Length: 161
Image (cartoon, rainbow, N blue to C red):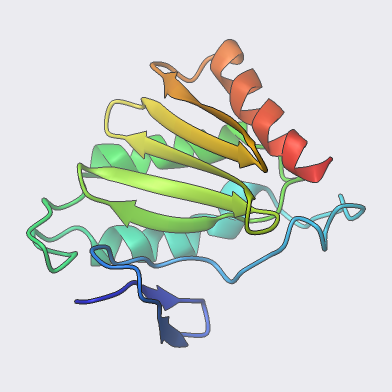
């Protein structure tokens, strides 16, 4: 495949010119649009569970990306669910995508140069990258504990600022 395939819950599709990965994700939500709206129904995990299940099911076979990527494992799916439990539902739903290397990614955007991406692997390790204009923050969190959660939430909160 020569581009990303995007699907929302209504099963619409579009292709972008970025190569090499297949993405199944939630409908786009701008952080700017929901800045003052903190009342959400349900928690983030329950809202994203159908999308996460779709991503997992489509990427749970070898070669899911058309480039020979290994299948996602159930441990990665479980780690992604644990991660979602740690993110308060005051944040909008992120885009959800499978990544090569047995990882599931969550991406929040607030403009072209403002975003935060968190990748979760089968061991529960988080790799994150956040861009706020000219400022960047990235790193690896070996275990999702209070300190790791604080780093992720600080980056997400900064997107709302």
